[in-house]
Length: 436
Image (cartoon, rainbow, N blue to C red; front, side):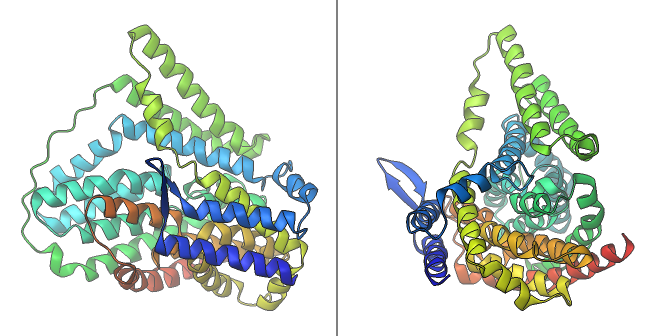
């Protein structure tokens, strides 16, 4: 156990330091994330040192059960591709421009509309896609209106990482934890709808209180009119995303795994739009742009951390943690510990580890711990930048566009929002579990 704990600890520490000190390295003009490379090295070290054998790791990666990380990655990348396609068609920018148009010169109203738009889109797409899409847009209109962009940036980030827990597809951590417990799409939503809604309202009012002074400053926004260049492709994308979500709600009941539905939706979109482009004699540039924007680094990172979690399970560490945490008050305990854990070594490896820990529980106790961990993996994202990959990507976008936000500033906002929102979310979860 000692060697496994040492290697795993060094890997986690290395990932944290890489995110804090040097999140990216450049090789021949190309930028690569350092955090996933450290995860890969850690996983191979565990394999080569005998802490976990190759057969056990391979069996885990290729298992037929729902917790197979390769299946979960297919779901994530398929949903991301559908969302990115809609963004390339101008859908998100169009909705944001409508919100700004309705708000006119009132910052409070604009703040409300953008929060609602981001929240709704996050529910049906994912937090990463919304953050990557709306952050440049917010910086653009804030510069043009000569207003402080921070209220909108923070609210966007908080909304995206709060509403991402509504559906199982909103965050890779949701998929991993729920799939590992055999929870289907509709059962997940039934429990998480109330805590998600309560969290969203709580976060909105806390953010409005924090930025009250800034939101009453004058604003003069002059936005260019956003035109949808290709309505057929946009409508096709919306139909495929909508059908995908509808099919996911019934997939489990008819014996179809979620990754089949997501992959089929993407392939169908590719076929339909390809035929359209061929008929119209147009170049498939939209596909190339979509491929370029997919977060490929997530694949080796998730697979590597899955191997680390398997090694910790093999040495008995997860069983020890499960016994230590006990079976009493699992909702508050697992909710708080998972939130802290997400910010100790990122929400994805935390979820991989906690999925195994929760596996030692049974019945209602297990469900309470699992959903509380889901909440912690989402809300923990805005406590510190380490909490989620979304935070790392978000800060990278801000830095590239000249908007400074230090680690301490991030935490100053994150702590004030995360504490009340986490409290409300866990209370909502307790009520949901009592009802259902």
